[in-house]
Length: 249
Ligand code: NAP
Image 1 (spheres, helix red, strand yellow):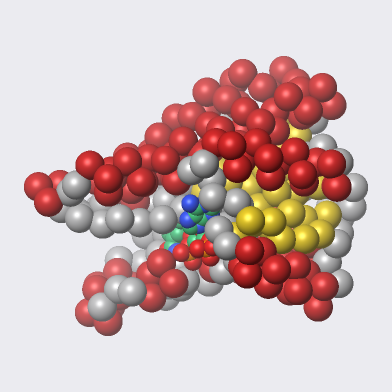
Image 2: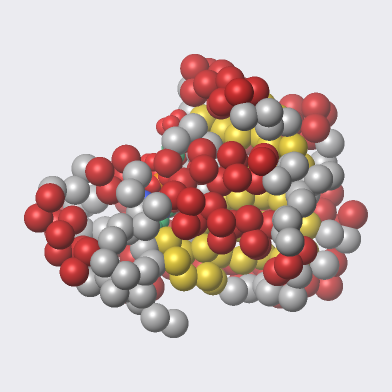
């Protein structure tokens, strides 16, 4: 059985690299029209190029999700070109790790703005049209760290746990309009976010993973594909854990 996303207009934030780039590619190859975002014009142009070379319908847009005006403008531009967004993937995310005793207010605020407030902001922007259409899907990238905690990541873990509570509430608000809101919680995935870890830290992490390896971006993209498709139509307010068995829920 092939999954077809023909007719879907999908926004993937943070599609210039890592997990977001693979999500955009996977959904695009299944026939969706994809808007992928990067924080720079160069990054956006590169996304457009990548789509072209993969025969994916869509383009790159510049978007800093922590800027309210930019979110309003970019979403309006996307919808003018592509039509109403039918699936929103809130993927953009950053880390600003520090032990609490050393954590500066801006390290806390940056994480809340980029990782959590953006999810509120973009969900609110897309849900008016989804409510009118009585259909839509919102998929939010959280993290295993939001469930287990991680020393040095109290800001990141708080934002990621916040996304789960937000998604459950929104799923209750929008269920009657046939809009599904779900989360994907990756474990440790091989991207630039984890490439900064020391080899010893990586080994220690892998020791906690029953499947014995870091995850690949495709492991996450395939889960997002399932949640973007009609195959998951009776799932809402849930989190799918994709972590090699590191956390079993
Ligand atoms: P990544 O490789 O570091 O890529 C981050 C993406 O987010 C880039 O496309 C980046 O755009 C974009 N971005 C950063 N700041 C932004 C902002 N202010 N506004 C809009 N976009 C912004 O990250 P990743 O590892 O693929 O992670 C993707 C998501 O999965 C994140 O939400 C992360 O928390 C979550 N996650 C990752 C892991 C992991 O092990 N990698 C584990 C659990 C959860 P530019 O290229 O323009 O900077």
